[in-house]
Length: 335
Image 1 (cartoon, rainbow, N blue to C red):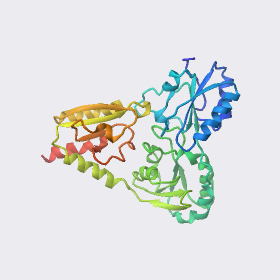
Image 2: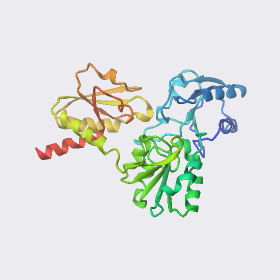
Image 3: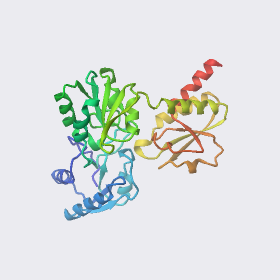
Image 4: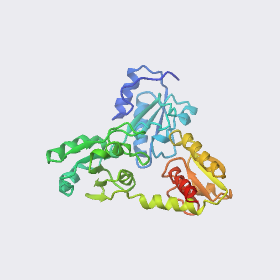
C-alpha cells in the first residue's frame, strides 16, 4: 500500500470510469478497493463492485450507511486490506479545524440525482422577484446543473451571483447541513438565494444569512420560499435549555470519532467556558450518536460538538450547540 500523497487536479470524479482511469494512469499497485456509500444507492455500490472486479480488483464494502464524506471509512477498509477507498455519494470534505482527513487514497464520486430540476426552474422562475440580486447555491445532487441554472436565470434578466466554497466544501455553491459558507460568503452581495434541492434542512442553513431562499424543489415540483433566519426559534430553544440548566453541576460534551465530525478545538473551547463557570465537564466520544447511549450518567445536558444533525431527534435528554453557551456570558453580565 502506498503512503505517498497523490497530487490530483480534482478530488471529485464524475464517473467510476474516470476513477479507474486515474488509478491506471498513476500506476498504483492497488489490489483491493474499498467502497462506501449512503442509503438509497446501495444497488449502485454493488454495480461498482462488479465493475471493479472486471478490472481485476478485489473489493470490500462498508456495510454501514454514511451521511457524508465527514464519515470517511478509509481506516476501516485499510484494516480489511484495501489499498484505496471510493467514497460514493459525496464530494471531498475539508475539516474546518484543519485536521488531517488523510484522503490521499480516497476517490470521491458524488451522486448526481437523476430527477430533473431544470424543468421546475423553467416553469416557475417568474415566482422569483426579478428586482432582487440572486445568489445561486444547492446540494451536491444538483450542483452539476448549477451552471445551466445560472445561464437560464441570466437569460431571463436576473442578476445572479455564484456562491463560493465553504470551509468544508469543494464545489462552488455547494451547501452541506453543517456548512452554508457558500451562501454566507456572498450574502452581502445579494438580496435572496435560489437553492437547487429539496427539504427544509439545507435551505434553513442558507436562511441564516438573513435572506429568503427560493427553493427549486424537484420533489415538490415547484418553487417555495424558506423565510430568513428560519432557525431562530430553534436557537432560542437552545438558549432556553442553557438557562434552564445553568445551575446544574454536571455537563457533558459529545464529539464523534468520525474524522470529519471530530472537532477537538470546539470541544476544548466549550470545556474551558463551562469550567470557567464552575461546571464539572465530561467529554464523550462515539462513532454515531444515539440518545439512549447518554442516559444513566446523571448528566442533564450535553453540548454537541459533532455533526449538528446527530442530536436533532433527541427527545428526553437536553442538548445544545456550542454557540448556545454564549448565553452564559449574558447571564453573568446580568448577575
